Amino acid sequence: MKQNFLTPRIIAEITNGQYIGENEAFDIRVIGAVRDNRDVEPGNLFVCIKGARVDGHSFANKAFESGATCCLAEQELIEPKGPYVLVTSTLEAIKTIGAYYRSLFNIPVIGITGSVGKTTAKELIASVLSVKYNTLRTPGNLNNELGVPLTLLSLNETHEAAVIEMGISDFGEMSRLAQMVRPDIFVMTRIGYAHLDMLKDLDGVLKAKTEAFKYMKPDGIAVLNGDDELLRTYDPGMKKILYGLREDNDICIENIKINIPAYGSHLKELLGAAVAVGTLLGLTKDEIKRGITGYEPVEGRANIINTGEITLIDDCYNANPNSVKAALTSLTTLPGRHVAILGDMLELGEQSEELHHEIGEYAKKTGIDCLICAGVEADNIYKGYLSTNSGEAYYFPTKEKLVSRLPELIKKDDAVLVKASNGMRFCEIVKLLTPNS
Image 1 (cartoon, rainbow, N blue to C red):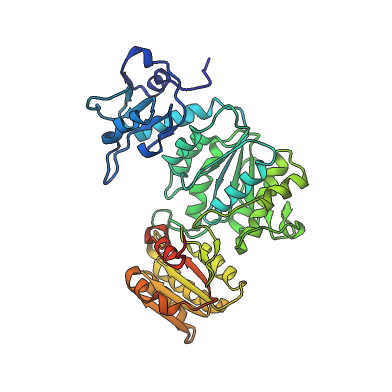
Image 2: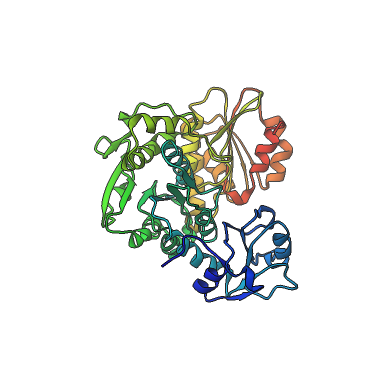
């Protein structure tokens, strides 16, 4: 019979690891897990991860000083101030621990993926469910093979539901995530041009993301964007609910009269996912409405900031062709001169040049007044914009060169969109445009 909590003994057993430490600490309860010693809270498991620049093993004793109960390590610790479990790979071990710990909870778990809007969908759905249930949601961007088990390990006996974001960039990753999450309901937003260097094309993206269905129970439910042709025709092998703007979807957004306290053309579409999950878990229409109106955007994800000088749309966390087009469309709905500051969309493989060029053409088509581009690939956005006739546009090979000219390019009362892949660090541009932040 499984205990409903973790101890160093259990961790050693399920990971085939070696416990090293005092016997009296063998059965002390472990509460949650972190990989950064600065985030340690009393009772935590500290996971020593070897990064490209920093080795977590060097911070094990700092973690113990902050109250960690135990460490998970893949090399012997030097003069440790507490017990640890020695394993072959801490990354593989934490996934095993996450899967085991998830199995201890008999609560509805909602998995969320997609190329566009999965973080927004996660926040919307969690906001709705929180009206009725104590709901765990993925914090920040912990949606990968390390972040997902860390999220799962923050579950406790007070939680009544969990909303877990699942992000991938290659084949096989979703299978490994789904083996841990075991979602009861799996929500998919749009399939888009993302991670094409590994996934090649839209069919590849669909194939990779739908790996999750192999790890769901027969009575699981797929909640899919019915406006996406690939998802609309996809058979998940279980009950399927379609949502979106099309009238023949199971949940048609046009029939939902709720004002969302946020910006973005994609938000209306994602309402259907929140309504579907809320309805499946027994919320009333009034409860669902309260949850949606209580939604708050995440920093870097279509977050509107009134600086007193301009209206700034901070959407710089990530970018792919679908999300950039949605952001450009949304920008034109705001008052003022429409300025788009765009950077490289990364991991687009052989289609990168073509897809960046299309964004420039689309920006012109939507009526953007001023386009500002920075980055190696963003040169193709600039060229695409100018190919459709002349317009106010600027290109800078680096973000630093853009920043030096920024004060003269932005005018009072402008509506300014900032968007690029996270690796471009356009969050620095957002900070410059919000002097009081």
